[in-house]
Length: 330
Image (cartoon, rainbow, N blue to C red; front, side, top):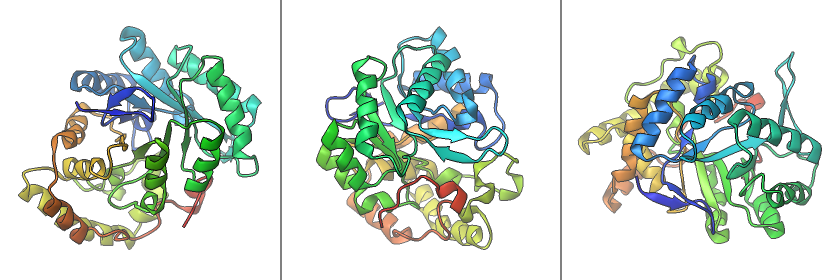
């Protein structure tokens, strides 16, 4: 597995990491044993960068990682996140970036993981009325205490990143980015490059749309994130399936799979990008990681751009409820 730097001055990690939201059932039921099998395959294939969060299954994802690394210590660079509250009755999200809440969230994450330090700690969503400079002061304090190695933000705007980075260097920003979610091209990818910040695309395979087998919304389980996602609802879903089909044919012509080709495209957008596809199974992980070994020619990239131009996707990437907390900048 090739390596990329996790922000200027940060550690070298695998060019493709592993998003661990699916360990908590985001795309269907799973078990700790299945998560451990995926983590074991990741180790075997050279993946050493894991991404999780305290709200993924209310700690389920973190605890699955923690029980695995107890047996395999020191093998992964781990990022987790805090800053979201969930009402235990209504499950409604709110955002709290106060020092008190972030400290409690971080301590809980460390306990779940069985660690006293995590290499990267993200603010999962910004609390809109709290100045980001104040939030940075809290995170810098955690770093000085040795609890975190680097500071990150999820789904913020380029303007917010520049304000935060003026207080203390930010290690990484993560946002949804793939062939069908292109907003980061309007400033975030460039801002990260300018500042020496790693850009970490999550859902780089379009939440399964670039898999060989097209997802079937009729088979989504009750807890599947995509149930109310506009792009997976008709008529948008049908339009999206039709739009992506020529890309799947191109992948076959190139001797690849859609997932491998889509991952190679993301990696080709800059050497400061470290995508984190999520999967519950070792089989899919092999296919995703193969993208690191694919070198796309200018002609390949031009053909992909012709087939799937920016803005081709039908429907918003989030429902209104899912969009809450993500900063929009265009």
